[in-house]
Image 1: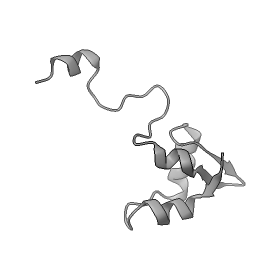
Image 2 (image 1 turned 90 degrees about the horizontal axis):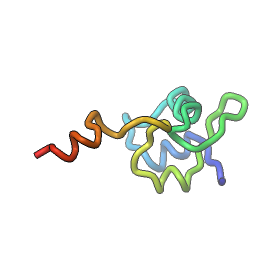
Image 3 (image 1 turned 135 degrees about the vertical axis):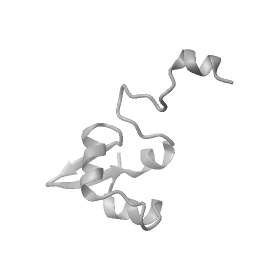
Image 4 (image 1 turned 30 degrees about the vertical axis):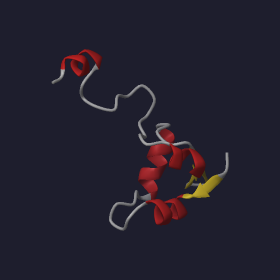
Length: 75
């Protein structure tokens, strides 16, 4: 795991106005939605895994409000 400071991820991966705050990054790491570590209150993100993933949800959560039976019957 190569860790990258949250400010660098923000600058390289997000447009101004859509960048997560330091607190939001910490919450994403704490809920395991994003791989990383919080060191002395500063979030560091596993940049390679972050860029490779398209959906960032904590373990056990769904990507939409529809469950599998709804998806199968949805027209």
